[in-house]
Structures are given as structure tokens and as C-alpha cells.
Length: 254
Length: 192
Figure (tube, each protein chain N blue to C red):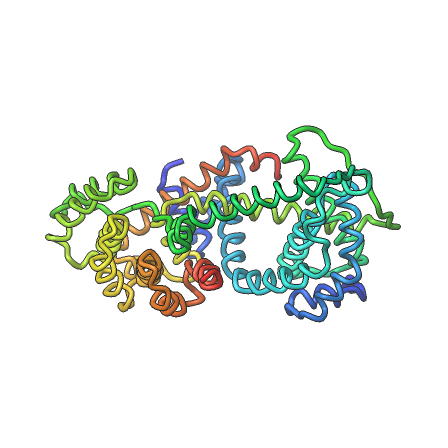
């Protein structure tokens, strides 16, 4: 369906469609099942997603309580119920116990010394970059660089994406979204000072990208194992932010 | 005539209030039965804990909707939600037909069945919308969330630093993408 139709459906659902257009759309929906289905689907998407966003704080709090209470009421780690009662038991000779213990100790020691540092593991767990989706207007200076940077960034070619974003920002230094993504490129390239400077500047503004910048500032500190700084920034992430749940989870792990 | 509220509504209220004592009471009274059911159907105590937790969360989500009234015993309702969730889980794990053996019997489960079925369907449809919404680009997600949570399109465009016309066009493209994905998904037809 044409995007104009979705604009009309949105206006209809927002209650801002003119009387005649509203009546015409309703009449069309009565005779066109595909239109009626799309209208109903968009309406349901709005209702369900809005309700879910509104429920998020209550869900998070309830889940926390359920986890705490649940931990004391189930025999965790008991394995399958089917294998429990009828399962066979083996007795190991003492020499085998000693060999098994030595092997286990070796495995634990190898794991301990060879595993990546904790901050790197946490960074790998939490540090996924959002896909770039820039607002590109063809008539603007540097639009070609921004368009190219979007594709390059999404291919994870961060050095090249940074070059293209830097060229674009030469003409549009106030584009916060482009600066944020330049910061992400610096972060991936382990140029922490440059990344932090960008994230701090955006994060301390009232820009729509401020929460995102603070989240990645915290991750930049995490990657450098500056845990106190990381915690300090995570604690500043607002509960309305889309990163709040991740920030809370990371704080717990820290 | 309004539908009478069941005395077990106190359990629903405990979930809505995130009341630790009330929730502990739910676990004390019902967790063992759900563990017995899950373990009798190829699961473990850990599986039972997860199913129980997810079921309570889904029930709380449904209970927050306007007009929700518990009209049946909470235990039957909870058992049937857990049963449905565990059935879906073992079907997903085995990827083949499964049979369930019940460890509890309840009388007059018509209302509990209907409530449990509606909670499971509601949860599955919520998940479907959320999964496809999360597949949208960061820009689309930000735009739709701002717009659908009460900002006017002028405010949205100011917030995002784009023109009003661009924000409207982009929003339509994002919704078109979302609905296209959902309508093409197998879940869409199976969850009607």
C-alpha cells in the first residue's frame, strides 16, 4: 500500500482527519477488506506497543520480585523430573575421584587464566551498536557522505564510516545523530578520548540522542575498565530512557 | 449486571501491587503443583520456575487492562496458563506433536479456560508486535515511539531535528514496513 494511505490511517487514528475524509475512509474500509485489515492492524500495533511501553517499569519491578521469591520455592538444578526417580547412580573409586578432581581443577584454572577480562566480556555482552538510519536530504551539502556513511557503518567498516562522517560534519557540525555515530566509530576503533568527548557533549545536552550518548559513554568507560566512571554514568540514565533496563542490568553485573 | 469478582482476586491484586508478601503466598500455595506438572511432562524444576514466573507476569499484564475481572479460582487459571505455556515450550523444543499429561483436575473450568486462553493469545500477539517493532531501524523506533506516546508530529519533528513533512513521510514508511512484516509472518495468521 502507498505510504500516503498510512499517513491517512495515522491521521484517522489520531482523530485529526477532516470529517469528509474520515467518512470516506470508513466507507472504503467497509467495502475493502484489505484496507479494513490494515487499519485494524495499525490500530492494534499502536495500542499494544503503547501499553507495553507503559507497562515496562511495572513489569521490570514485578519480574525482580518474582525472581527473588521464585528462587526459594523451586528445587533449582534438580534436572528433569523424568530422569530423577528412575535415574541410575554410579559410584567412582577414590583414585577416579582424585583424577576427576585434578582434571576439574585444571579446567577451572585454564578457564580462569584464559578467559577474556570481565570488562571485555561485559562490553561484548552489552556493546551492540544500533543500526544507522540517517535523515538524508539530497539538497544538503555533504548528503552523499552521510548516505555513504550509513551503509558503511551498517557494514561495520568503522574506520571508513568515520572518515565519511567527519567529512559530512565539516558541513553540518550540529548534526547530533551523525556525531553520535562518529563517536561509536571512535569507540570501536578504541579511540576512547575522542569517543568520550563526543558522548559527553551530546549526553549533557537536551538532545533526543542524549540518553544514547550517555549509554555509550558508560560503555566507553567499561571498555577501559574505568568501572567507577561507568557506574556513575549508568546511574544517571533516566528511567524513561530506552537504555534504562540495560543500564540497570549492567549496574548489577558491575 | 456486573460480573462478580472472585475472592481469589487478592492474588491478582498482589501481582498488581508487586506485594512481596502476597506474591510469596502465591508461590507457597501453587508453585509445588506447577513443578509437579512440568516435571511430569519432560521438564525440570528450573523449567517450572521459569514457566511459573512467565505465567504470573503474563497474568499481571492482562490484569492491568481495563475491564479485567477474575471470575474463577486463581489456581485453575494459573495452572491453565502454565499448562499452555509449557505445552508451547515443549512443542518448540521437540518441533513435533506433543501430548501433555495433567497432574491436577479442576471442576467447571470453562471460565478459567477462557481467561487462560485469552492471556496466552494476548501475550503471543504482544510478543509478535514487539519482535517486529524491534526489527525496525533505531530512527523508525524513535519516531514511532515519540509519536504514539502523545507528541504531535510537529513536536516529534522538532525533537528529531527534521522537517515536519519529512517526519510524516518517514513515519508512514516505518508503519508500512512494520505492517508488511507482520502480515507476511506465520504468527499473524496463526494468532488470529
